[in-house]
Image (tube, rainbow, N blue to C red; front, side, top):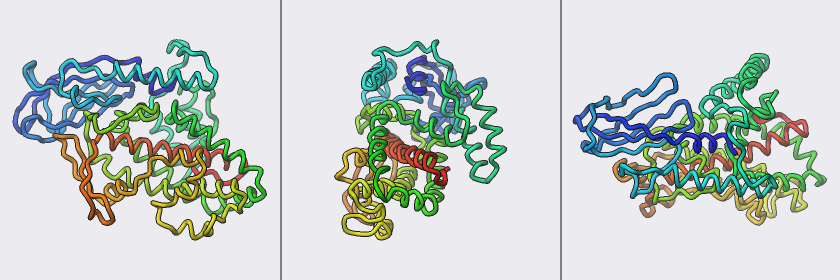
Length: 415
């Protein structure tokens, strides 16, 4: 069982609170699902005047109200606001006073985990939560990892190791990491399970083919001097952006990691769009750049030098428009599966501020086509979060592959 899914299934309690809008005074019934993270923040729209409201729940602190919200006296005739940090709602359920998305979706998460266990030959039942040490939660672990990673990037390996040793001794890992690269490798691996583990296995097998090609040693040397440093900066920045906004992405993250569909029929109860509007475009750019490593591996698999594609050189390929770069390995099913989410139109809208969000309907509107001159397109905020999460997970699979290559073959680590 993954860390996130175990937490989600374990904690289903619904807390009922009442909040009034500071602008118009309208009272709302808040039905708040309890998730697995120590902090959960929710942003939602006043059902009367449309102004943004918000609440935050934090372990050992409790509930705080704001922006634009104040605790109110009980009023069960008020409009219902359903909130959950770990699940999305259907359009039919979002305003219902008896909505429990965790019941149906938790069942799907369990099915996904059982399927993954069966596929790798593990027993067809989930271990008891009491049998395993409690793992640190994502928003507990990430600040610690970010600090150690940042110290490493700043050349302070001794301080980074001090933090690693201090935090990880009580973090609940079955196989406790002892280095920054091992910590990152395990942490991001946990974020991609259970479904994407099979995609990871696929690209790992492709690396196993490339290793025996004549040009592999030259490829490692090139990676060491030309790719690792720039790739590492992108990974660090994207992890900061995604995990720094995890209170939003957590609504869909484990569903996406379990390959459970989140589409335009779903509604994200919390909608802090200002926190996420640029993410897809920035992740698209990072993926479009760093995916060059899959192209180099594919070149060797097809018995060419790593820096020679079928019709152009690797140097020219790196100068091409990012939107077409995944076509270089489209004929390799294992590699192309890692690039399934890669939408240039959504990238353009996200990257260039071309999206408008209607909190009342939960829809993002943008224009497709070059320069945003095409037809208008709509996507639900829930679906946008899900597609952003999938793109992030794809990038993390490539990141893990780079860590593996660098660690095993002596290149500069991409951290």
